[in-house]
Image 1 (tube, helix red, strand yellow):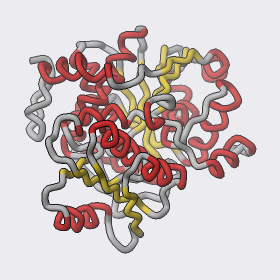
Image 2: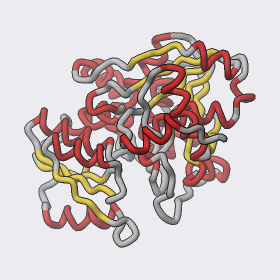
Image 3: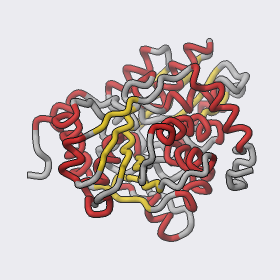
Image 4: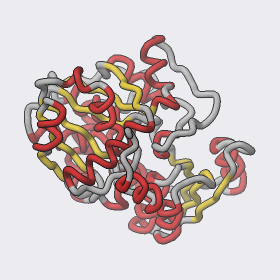
Length: 328
């Protein structure tokens, strides 16, 4: 076996990854690869964008949600999400003939709440200052004892589903570096698993919102560190308390480093994506370019793939981002 042995996910083997790579592509859209010559000239590196904005439900999360839910027998699903995983679960449930309840912070983007509801999911809105997502999920599991708890990132089936994006990226070209947004770690650990399974030499760099840099602090300390509360960051998809345990086991040895991205750089990246590449990107999806804008010297002369994890942005947030320069 080429993959490392993960105590929390012994099922995450090369054989299982190969199985997912064979089956899942029939149900997902290939990612969109966009060469970015203007960004490349500005940043002094060769930038290619891998955008999941056109994936079903508008983000990479559909890869994970479909792979996970197609593998379980339960017909009612409970999950917690700031939006993207929730709507991916809702759509996967619609396709698979299941139902779902999605615990969401009341501060979630309205476009994401509406999307969950449009796919037939129940959006269970909470004030995270009064009750945590985990506590509310626990209440719902008591109410629905036969339901399945779909975790957004800390599940080997989620990681394997996301690894299909890494396979696509590594099949396109010889990148020196892949830059990937980091929240709970489901996507970034999937990219690492794909790289390790293929025995590629590409380095993987995480991009995390600086206001909630638990993953960067964990990597530096060599142990899993949690935020005290959900971080207040514009990157709503990365408002996580900590990495998942499985994700930490993958990432602690799989990432070259994690760059903390100030919100102002994330907003600047949104602006750059629109003006330079005509791409609609959500703040969490802009973290990868935000990392390049934060530390441009680190990527000079390299062939870099920036992962755009999704495009489900609140219209008001997006309008402000593309009509103002946050750096002036």
